[in-house]
Image 1 (cartoon, rainbow, N blue to C red):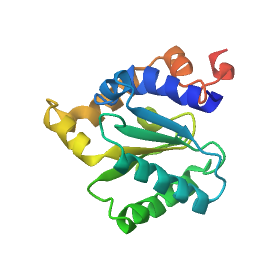
Image 2: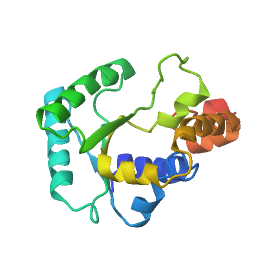
Image 3: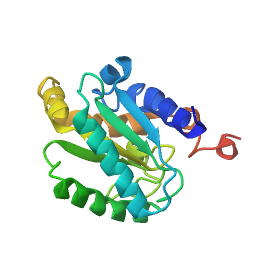
Length: 185
């Protein structure tokens, strides 16, 4: 397993599942239904082809075998503004192949920044992954999970509160790619 996939798996298990940021992630992880794939693409065209291939694979694979996919992108889109701009192409791809309503692509990035926030705001940590990621989500599965969850609208606020509660040491341990030893010393 590559160091990039190991880092993303650790983030998934310790941050996303461990902090319960996504209450719907533990089940597919427990049942080995999360695909984490690494791409070495360096152009937007190549990355869109990779995304198309992964969406095709997801559409042709039963949900019992593949619930969701994380595409790890270590070699491009390091600048968050470039990454955010690329998401327009992702949306166009979903529309072009008539995957709207079947799939959505969620975004995670080491420098993720929600609109109206400052880069250093802790709430941004909810979407800060070790590398730029594209997360393919099945719409039907998400709708079922939300329907069976007691307060889905409260998830973002709970996640923000959880991030604001983290100590400096917890941040270093959970986000070593953001808070290195220099900040720990």
